[in-house]
Amino acid sequence: MTSPTRPAPVHAPMDQFPIENGELLVGGTSITRLAARVGQTPFYAYDRRLLTARMMALRAALPTAIRIHYAIKANPMPALVGHMAGLVDGLDVASGGELKVALDAGCVPGAISFAGPGKRREEMSQAVAAGVLLNVESFREARELADISARTGWRARVAVRVNPDFELKSSGMKMGGGPKQFGVDAEQVPDLLREIGQLGLAFEGFHLFAGSQNLKADSIIEAQKQSFDLALRLADHAPSPVLSLNLGGGFGIPYFPGDPRLDLAPIGANLAEIAAAASHKLPKAELVLELGRYLVGEAGLYVCRVMDRKVSRGQVFLITDGGMHHHLAASGNFGQVIRKNYPAAIANRMGHQVEEGVSVVGPLCTPLDLLGDRVPLQVAQPGDFVAIFQSGAYGPSASPSAFLGHPPACEILI
Image (tube, rainbow, N blue to C red; front, side, top):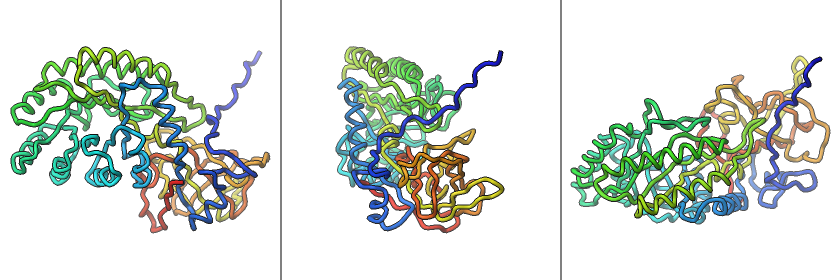
């Protein structure tokens, strides 16, 4: 007797954008009208309503003691950062350029932190002058910050980014555990803390970021517990009380067929226990979660126009004016080991029931320029719009926009 065939995994429902008269709506505006308003394709559209709703849901699920920071690297569009600055408790930056965006957005400098394994002296000088918290990732950085402080008279605020002796299991990208370019190995941190005290820097706390894009609550909970325990051990070596403990993030969103949605309830319960323990063991410390894609990823669409419909030896290709030069992640060339399709739709034919298997490609002269590989989509013709969901994070700024000289994509916040 043969075993029943398992159904192929499908994408999680992409129901965050309403449908009206057969068209996706972004910010209450249909795709066709939005494209006319933008004046070009391709474009990225980010929905303010969805950004706000995600933050409200997160606040409701987490204890009030947890401070939420937005990691600008996920999406540094200035208008979006300005919107997020009014919703979160702080911003995290990874360069002098992102620092400018954060300051221009009106974020209080004291609520900005700066991480990155290769900070230039000029960037560190900017950060010290602005009064933001620098996450020190090497002995060299601590010594340069001490020199900057001595030369300017502005005492650098610092936290130590720790490379823990564990990793975030089941994460898309592992940012800690084992040999890493990020942070200072946990076993070396006591020596660094001693030097920070000797150098006269203003020590404030620890930053631990074990990994990203995780959809398993148990893995995130385990990493948070281990991070807190490690911070407690390291606090015994600190030159002053811990004022800030950044537990990282790692919250993922469903990109690919079969991906579940992250269950926040157990994470919130675990963080409540950590917050209760911290009130006694680290009484002056503010607990921080640093989130990027989880806050903005599902609020964005990438929209491109079908330029040609081609059939090659029985396979249908929709050739669009967008591609990997705008959306490297959707092409499968941004960290995927095995290429998988992002959820997609023909955004102006949402009511059509007839589907066909097509490959959505761009105008670039490379087979890597693939936005969808044999995906079931509504039957499309030139002039129709392809929408790629889950596109609010790591879009234009993470893509090779200059490749082959094609025009850049536009970004709008609506």
